[in-house]
Length: 408
Image (cartoon, rainbow, N blue to C red; front, side, top):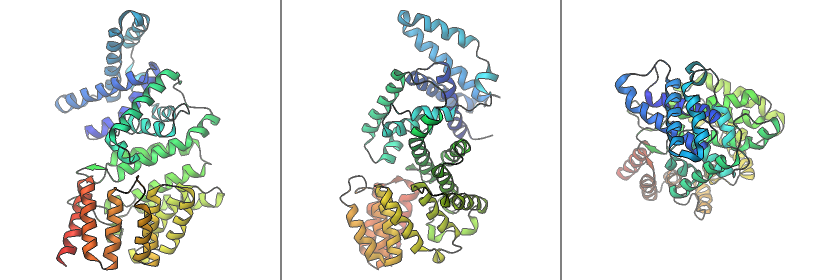
């Protein structure tokens, strides 16, 4: 049996999909499902998890929706009557455990073209990924209040546009696929390195992102970027067990015990990207997967083919304006051409408001100063990075690096 928190995270988007399919009022449906999840979080630890937890959540959500409609009184009396009838005929075997997973339908619904790309991604992270507003804001590098408004507007757009709850046609799917892949990428990243809290990983999120990406890949087997994203996730997640000590402390890539890496996932990811790259159309996810494959195929850190990684990031920079890509490019350049080159490239990022105050910029700068032998500036930047992260494992790692250098 999964821990209750993880079980709820997996079931919530499925239940939301079921509720939206039956009662197409997205904001009210999400509120109803959230209330059902809260009720489960309180009752299940005390009373035990029901035999059919998905049906239990669905039943509670339906009741919450009926209560909401009743409060709307006369104007929606006919709808209220309809909901009362449907509530009484909820069949747990059909509505709660049919084996049909509405999560993928919900995913494509949230990425409808009536929404802006940023709103679609934010809404999907909330409804499908289960991230809170602060975590989503962190992923987008925007203030939390801004993100809250964006998500609220997206919900209202879904409600007023009358978007049907069904998988899109092949043509519609192609239009939405870019946003779908981006949101799956962000969900995975939040799971692989949590933006806040005491744990480095949120495995439930990263595994859900992999599961959903597999589902998309099964339906889009010839799409090279879908394959690239799945390969990227597998190759990155393969290192998860080696990223922390038994006490939960972060271990850098160069210091990891590579015998702990998941060989099966690496083999699958390498095979996937190797089969995908020759097909012609190369995109950002394929290039990132190729970088991950180069790292994973090195038996020792010193065997890493940094010139190849630098070449891949040169290509990636031409395709993407993402400051994180430029940050990683600076690291690769430093490993090939020396830390001074990397530090010069970092100076260009200091005027980019999206990353100028991000802890990773300070952390990379600290690492490059350490490589150059300037321990004082390295310590200053490690401490600056620690002050800017909400992740306790990352903060502890950064402060530990600073302390070691300060004592040397």
